[in-house]
Image (cartoon, rainbow, N blue to C red; front, side):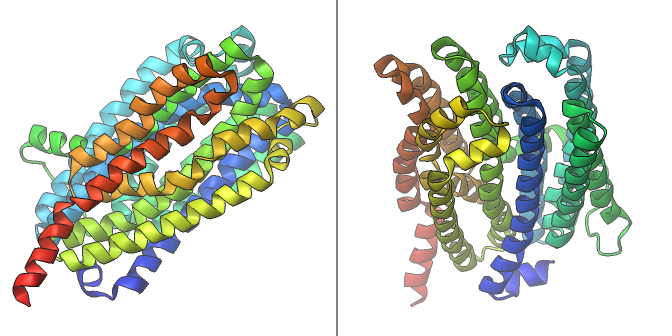
Amino acid sequence: MQKDVLKSPIYPLFFQYLFASLGGALISMAYSLIDAIMIGQYEGADGSASLATMMPLWSIIFSLSYLFGIGGAVRMANARGENNYQKGDEYFTTSFILLSATFILIWALFFPFKNQFLSLFGANEHIINFLDKYSFWIILSIPFFMFGQLFSAFIRNDGRPILASAGVISGGIINIVGDYLLIFHFHLGVEGAGIATFLGQLVNFLLMSSHFFSKKRKFHFTKPTFFLSKTKEIIISGFPTFIVDLAAGIMTLLFNQQIMHYYDEDVLAIYGVICNVVMSIQALLYAVGQAIQPLVSTNLGAKQMDRVLKIRNMGYGFSLLLGLILFIITMCIPKEITSLFIKTDEHLLAISPFYMRLYFIQFLFMGFTIFSSFYFQSLLQAKKSILISLLRSIIFSSILVFVLPMIQKDAMFLTMPLSELLSIFVIIGMIIFDKTSKTYQKNQEQNS
């Protein structure tokens, strides 16, 4: 791995990791959307509205998986760049222990109190009863999902990005086929979708686990030294991504409550569609950051700053292009998107384009802000990455979601676009004063 990442030409290396990461993200996006589409087509508006109340749980699972997965993988890659493989193995083992304790705690809380949590997430009694069996299967799948994400992050950093994507692709295929058979053929409805999700996550976990039996594996379980110190380092490195996904859950909760205050269940159903689209597109934009993370972190450890900056520039360019393409697509077909998720409902089809177009403006800016967070995280500049995540995901958005509807009710749907735009101004300042860039330029001037 080290020789390729540190010495291979940047462009083919970047696209090798990018295409592998995007492939997995596309399948992940496909089965997340198809899952929601099939539930919506079978159950109608109830299905879409109910899935909106499940988003906070998914955000908790995603955020904790990334906290220990990406946080530990960044540290491992940096240690390997310094040619310290033992230290890298200790980061992996520490991450594994932390995630194991976390999923046990989640199970202990969510299994006995799942109805109370669903109520907290904005579900009324009707939706809680509707989600009873579906939520059981989702909670049951939590360890397979979390460890699948953890292993995927470390496997990418172990030089096997294709295997990391293969697990997601295989699990996605199982999920999609399972959705069709269980929802429509066996008429299990939303419970069938939960079972299909469980089976897909199990297959992904098993394929990720196969890396431990491969001769290509270069990281191992070992007894970690300075466990508390490494825990702190992992949490600091993973915290920016943790904040993004946790904040998505918090914002979904706030939006659910605000929508029920200002609107009704019809608009909540539309917001359920919006959540699924944004979550899937966000996964695509994450893929660019996840692709450059092993490359940036390892080259940083080896002090090859020229390569780091080239990777950064390519990442920004591709993120902006991808965001623009996604913006154009979603602006052109909002009614078609709604009709995919919800059985024919002329009222919802008529009102959904207005709300969706307002909310989807954020795609113009989201690629830039998400990549920036991943980039500074990969540089081990956690404070900058955390600040970006806090600004775009919590600080700006949590203020705007309350202030904007007081100015004009529908302006609430501009909360996320304005949060992303305001964050860009802060990020531009960070890039201008980025010490990595300035140090490299100074060294170049001295050498010349």
